[in-house]
Length: 354
Image (tube, rainbow, N blue to C red; front, side):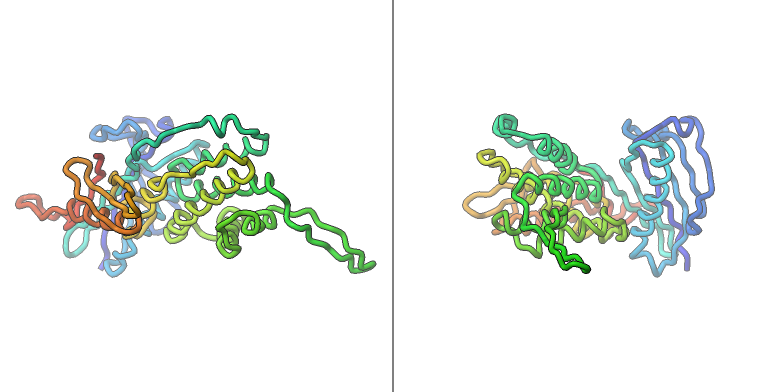
């Protein structure tokens, strides 16, 4: 039995591609797509970040509905890739949803992609701005800044690893490797490359094991070095996890090369907002966006949601407390079917701003 699937997405980007008044129906080379429509922002959509509206129709076996979200996201990504490259501009998915008509009814999934901004942290830029920064440091800071932005997992990880590679050059070089000439057997020292410098950070910095640094380097190599690894939802989740380690490594490099600066590094919510709300998701987009307040007192972590009349979840580590808060939030947003509304989903997830 086939399910009729519809994916709709609002994109932020160049609105001049398609006239606002009408849409364009077109073919798409992926054989799974039965219909593709691109139009301007519909009248009922009030989000001014959205310039284009994409609708994709395809069919999928009802027995494969568990993997339907992965297929939906893959098809959407292919359409958005083509739009962005054609425009030569940054095109972002602001909102997307899925609808599946099956023999048992209709399944609707809303997938808002924005992340609620966490509470601001105290800022003191003077130690870093007054440090003896070199042109190499400035190059690294630019990539580190982009890595801390709330962008796609692959772009974030790539920027963070570029910062690590650049900052590794500000630290002492590893022992040079030697190359033996096969003819005269003369040994000559070789200038260390990026791989050798990055792996040497395990010996230069405290708290880092060679296996952990090597894992980051190998992931960087397969994703952004050679492009041999597909950016599947599983890889996107792996990149989210690796980004936190890459950010810590970049900050450790920065602190080691600038004694006395002693930067704390990214806030826990920078990583946790992305990762722990995605643990139960079948893809790398957001099932739900919520703002969970996180605090620590005497080694006990407390996650509170919502901000008004909150329920607190206590645990000895941050991840357990946040997981409990996320599960509570999802359960709180379930609603039973209402008479007269027809076929509505069992779970209705919305973007929550508190």
